[in-house]
Length: 217
Image (cartoon, rainbow, N blue to C red; front, side):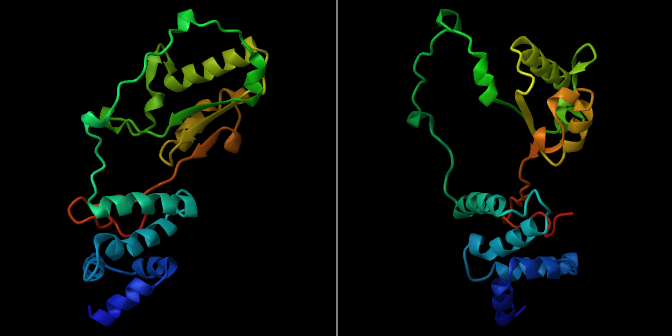
């Protein structure tokens, strides 16, 4: 691929790259990556591919916020800067008060301005699962999600706050399974009142920082 073609590729928009990439063979994708890798730093060479990939990836990756967040992280990675925090730079946490020694006056009215939020984006692939790890049974027939739901229901009843807000932050991999599991607890909410889905970011190849695949499925 000549210098003129490389310049044209680097000047193309993310939408143009995404459209063109769908018609490329694996060999052509490899040549495209090599062309972009000539004459500039890793970030400048590869970012157009990542931007195109994210814009083609659907609602979990195409938003400006998702793209800018990944752009920042990828720029740091491509720079080679260390992100480690040496132990010598850390300070011990100051002593914390003990719960039993605190003088607490319950204020249930604060629940009107509270959202109980649970992180629920991880799959249990390391445990041989292909669903949300929160679907593991932990007490009789109760899964983690059952215990969370029952805890929230108890709080609503105990403090007479039936409209207390509860949400889970799912990933695209756990959303459907989680909503199905919570269907037997209609008091928790449904749809966008129950969940929001975290961003989806591309996989980066360790060897050369290129996208693991050019286009998201």
